[in-house]
Structure formats: structure tokens, C-alpha cells
Amino acid sequence: MTVDLSVDLCGVRLRTPVLAASGCFGFGREMAGWVDLAALGGVVTKSVSLEPRRGRPTPRMAETPSGMLNAIGLQNPGVEAFCAGDLEFLADAGATVVASLVGRSPEEFGRLAARLDGEPGLALVEVNLSCPNVEHRGEVFATDPAAAAEVVAAVRQATGTPMLAKLTADVTDLVAVARAVTDAGADGLTLINTLLGMAVDTRTRRPRLAAVTGGLSGPAIRPVAVRCVWQVAQALPGVPIVGTGGVVSAEDAAEFLLVGATAVAVGTGSFINPRAVVEVADGLERYLAAHGVGSPAELPALFKAER
Amino acid sequence: MSPVRELCEVLERRRVGAYQALTLVAPRIAEHARPGQFVHVLAGRDRSFPLRRPFSIHRVERWGGSGGPPGWSPGASGAGLGAVEIVFDVVGAGTLALSRLRPHDVVDVLGPLGRPFTPPEAPTGCLLVGGGYGTAPLFFLATELRTRRCRVDFVVGAASAARLLDPAEAGRLGHSLTVTTDDGSAGRRGLVTDPLPDLLARTGAGQLYACGPMPMLAAVSRVAAAAGVPCQVAVEEQMACGTGICFSCVLPLGPEEPTRMARSCLEGPVFDGTAIAWAELEPSR
Image (cartoon, each protein chain N blue to C red):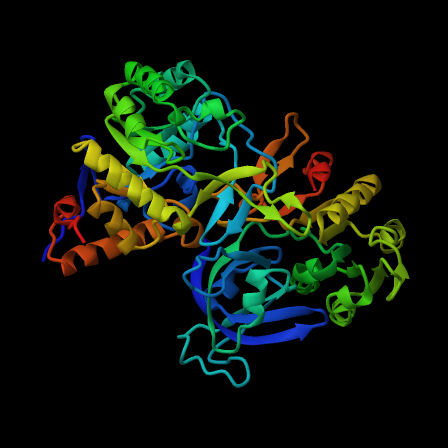
């Protein structure tokens, strides 16, 4: 059985359906000593904003059962430093680059997308509408279909680069948000961001994160993420979805692909195994071969929805 | 040299006073490790998905040729010969798991990570200041400084005598040893910074190295700056990845305003004591 791992994501050919998730792979260059960046499905960069952001105070991280909370606060060097340093490095390394964009208003997102438009080496943009570690809940655009659509429309107007919209599961009706952003011009979706969480140190009687609340990631949230991909894939067939949330093994990746994802992104898994993105793809190839499947794109049709 | 991931056999686990020392067969890490660098250790691979824990390298053993530690045959772990030792205090679930390891158990280790201490260019008197188990990397450093023909004087402190890390070994490695404890149960009562001005004057040390809790490092850095002696400190920050991708382990670097949040896993854990914006750091702790 010959397996071709490559997939089409919003018109972009990826070498494998396994990407490095935003915020969990730095700006990619940090990992050049651990993996061949060109061999990955893609590198979704840490979110970039127009101006540099300092991020939150420490502690920024807390281990929780089967996962972790983080409140990094979108620390990044700003789009100019990103283009001059990180993006150029990734492009030279032959990586498939997905730039994650973050802003405080639709207008900021638009300016950011315009700045990146036409940058050599940029394959896709991912619009981060759902980072929970922001000053105001109103910046979590993906909690409101209209606000999310407004951001996506601003980005769409500014760039022809294929666009993913990254959504949160912390909503009552995810399908409504997904429909709003695809109607507004998003080519695909990334599901899901971290879930808003909190943990308390009972010894000191203080929150374990300096920011009090943070984003929960890791295998703890995988069932939520799989459910979200399943729901949206059912409601919006034909919309490419990047599944993310607790992918640490090939089986986890297969789970997402079976319920309708086009690709997956490994997040927190890279913190424990710096080669996780590569190893998940290698394992997926073995999984597909063992099941007599020639391409990851065939998996959704093989899913047996009835128990 | 880039860090590597090694599956390391436990060679030995022993008590060192109130602490635990774990020696891991890690030929590739041991070959390239420098004092001040750290390893990122994953104990147990159960379904609860534990994160790694960072530990500074306390000691490195490199056995040349076909030698090896007594009673250990290289068959199980493959060829190369070398080991790293870490020291830890059992404070939570991660260190509890480490404290239960037995010889021949296997742990997953990334290393050597981070920037090491920079040794003096020429033989220079060095003052090594350690607090509690934070003294761990200073033993490795002292060994290297001695081979560089530097005079090494140790100052070690802790809350009480039991919380000192192997003062006998510090005494053996150093030309002198000064001990302080908060409660006076060993050495002089007080803080590690108390004897520093006098020791700097008496030994003519041209370089300070320190590792321990953040308030101690802040205080040592202040004393060094006042005396005009360069000071390198190794910080211990909470971190998830150890490889620069999670941005958890940041601390503010100056002197430019606004300060810059630097990752201690990549730019540290060793920093110039004058570079850290201590005033910004202290209120949050």
C-alpha cells in the first residue's frame, strides 16, 4: 500500500496533513535544530500583531490534568520584525508558512493582512479570532458571529492569500460562527483554540496564573475539539477544517481526519516532544497503510457515523 | 551543538541531605553539557500527559574508552559512556515521580539546554554563591573553573542546616567555604549576601556566579554591582517546553525601557545580573 500523505488545504498543497499549531512552535526557527521545517505539513506561527506585544506577567503556565493552562498574552515582536526575521528564515528553510494574525479591531486585522500581502514564502494566513488571553473579552471576536465576520471581511479585503479563521469552542452555537466567517470570506477554519480555564493554588489560595484565567490545552480538550470538527463538518460540508486540540499521536490525528478535518495541528504535544509534528505524520502514514487507505483525504468518507 | 533527546537509564538515585540526586546515563548530553545548562526531564509516560521538568546539571561524568561506572554494563543503553546528575527537592507530582525511580528505569530527557556560565578568559578568583538546592550547578561550574586554574571560593546558604546542598563537597571543591543559614543552625546566621562584601575584598575575586531563589539572585546582583564585580546568575523559571516555543519562562531584561521579556530557556538560564530588571520581577512574586 503506497500512501501519499499530501493534502490540499484551501488550494495550498501540504506535504503532510500535520501542521505545527500557533503558539506552540514559536516562530519556527526555534525548532530548526529539532526538525526539518520543510518536511512538515506547515508551520502556523505564533500570532503576530501590528505592534510588538510584551505579553502577560509570570507565572504564565500551570500544569493541569492531561493538559496545561497558559496565559502568555500574545507576546510577539510585531509584524515588521516578524517579516524581516522569522518569516524570511522560514521561507529560506522551505517551510510552508501559515502566519497567524491577531489584532484588537477589524481595522487592525486588515492593516496587518495588507502588510503581509505578497510577502514571499507566505502560504496562508490564520486569523486568530479566539485567543482567550486578552485584556477584554470583546477581543475574542469568535464569541460573536457578526464581530467575527467583520474581522474576516477586513482581512479578505486586504489580501488574496488563502485564509483560515481560528474559532473558539467557548460558544453556544459554533456552527453559526463558522457559517458567518465562511460567508465573510474565510477559505477554511481552524478548530479549536484553547478553552478558557482557571486553576487555584490551594496552599497560597491564589490563582495559579498571574493573569488569573488562561487557555486550557492538551489531551484534556481533545474530545471537545473532535466534537467541534464533527459538528461543523456536518453543517458546512466542503469547508476545509484544520483540527487542533490535544493531538499528540497519529491516532489522535486520525480521529480528527475521520470526523471531517482536512488537516490537524499539533500544539501542546510539541512542548513535550519537540519532534511531535514529524512523528504524528510518520505514524499517520503507518495508520493509513495499515487500513489500506491511500490518502488522508479519503478518511472522512470511511467514517462510520452510526455506532 | 544542538540539544538532543535521549532515553536515559537511571544509574543511581541517592539522598543528598534533604534532597535527591538522580544520575542518568546520557552519553550525548554529557559529552556537550556545560556548567549552567539544564536538562528537561519527563518522568513516566502515562496517560495523564505530564509536562517535563527542568533541572540544572549538578555533575557530569564522562568515561573515556570502554570504561564505565562500576557495576554498569553498557549493553542495555547502547554504546557511549557518560552520565549527568540532577538534584531536586520533592515539591510536587513531578518530583515525586522522579523520587520513585530506580536503577535501570528509563526517563526521557532533552538536553543540554540553555546558555551556560561564561568562564573568565584568564585565571581569575571566582566567588560562587548558592542558595539551597540552587547550589547544584555551581559544583559542575567549580570543577570546570578549577581546571582553568581559577581560585574558587564558595558561599552557600539555606533556611537551615538540613536545606544546605552537600556543603562537604563545596568545601572540597573550593579554596574556602562560607556557610550561612537563616536560623543559624549551620555557619553564620543570616543571608548569603552578608559575607559577600568582606569576601570580595579579602579574596580579590574578579567574578561572581550565583544560583538560587530569585530574591537571593537579586540581592547578590546588587552586592556585585556595588562592588563593581561582574556577576552571572542562573535563574530557575517555571517552563513548559524548554526549547523556546511556549514563552512561559520569560523574565524582564533591561536596562532599556520598556524592558524586554526574554525566554530563560533560550537566552538563559544564565544571565548577567545587571541585565535583569529585578525591580519589575520582585513585586509579582
